[in-house]
Length: 267
Length: 298
Image (cartoon, chains in turn brown, green):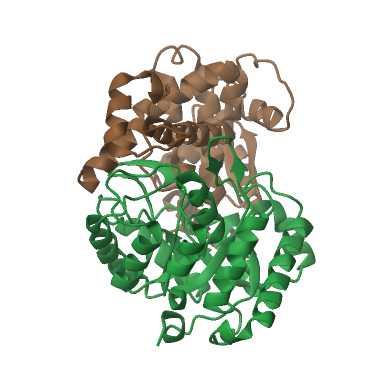
């Protein structure tokens, strides 16, 4: 058998969720590939790799998405992993990337799509994974803020650290995650909108922000100059005056937590 | 001139695998340890704690990267993105060699994250050897392949595993990371003579030896790295170093990871075994290059 054909079949065999030993076609095919021995038949030799595949992959997703396991129970979570991995086999050499499509999956595939808490939990877990090993950003010098002329501020654009993640949640999945990861047994949280920023200083952390501040961060992250961004979020902030009053406090928070990587002025 | 000598591969002594569980001890107490092996992929990331921890580790210890995802034996094209990231890691830590497994981990676009064995065929030898040559050209660091544990024997295999490993290493002109536990596990699973394996590997190409524990699953042994090194593997280790002389040795422990002092004690046992074995049989010990001088800050 050509090496390419052997590898192609081997991969398809080990990704089957149920044992190969009960499938006559798999048993026959295995005899053409593996020798077996007096203790393990040919199909059993392939099945060892199949078992390890599922242990490793479900284990990895379990490590990354304990909130989903908590909500679905062990058996339900296993079913989710099987469905997810069948739809999204790993395309990365890093197991770290295995769950990168989990949030979109639970948001769009039955029976999971009817529960927005699952999506919120998956997005929150993934934000923490991404923030953990995102590229480092240079330390921002807050004294730069004082050096910017008043009339230049509307033209300022802001670069944020690669580790910064914004989460608009319908449930407090971030607090739920903390509780689950502490080994507690939290009940399903009640619905409550939350705007959360996940960031990294020495550790990956998060804080709740208000909706207007969250919206402004989003506009700025998309590349809008500060003036244009403020115009777009003024209504959500309660009007222009309220926004102007809130801005210094927001900037103080952003600089304190290291959310600003760089301020840029045109030219 | 043998591979180790040509590439000035040092004998680093006996080290252990660096695992996050032990960071508080390693960074807080700076225990004596000859060297650490890291899993390359854990540090092939963009930033954050993994890289700052690595910087701290490299500042205090000799560090050698060991990969699990190169998939040198796959029929899919070489993953150039993977090699670029690995190269960046090598530039960062400047190790005396690097290694990965003589295996494949998936096919194009479908990685099963396992160390899958290859059939011992002429096709596989030619395929893998030319890929290793390409990898070495890219990495510009001596590269070693590790024999894996296996649970399947292929109908197509036309030679014993040690001949397969030796032929590839010769054709690719690469080093060998000889895993004595993997030899033992596979010998039990497939019924071959592990001593013949040790004797069949070109000794001058062995740049490193792995020692680990495994799990008896009843009808087969599983390479779990979850226990002490067993007596039979210690015997193979002694046989191996009588042939190779003093080469860098590493204790792996990846499941049910014990406290650091247990791991350090296992390393001390390996060190004593090495000294005893080479002391009583020095005529077979071949000289190896002395450890490289460490550059400032490395």
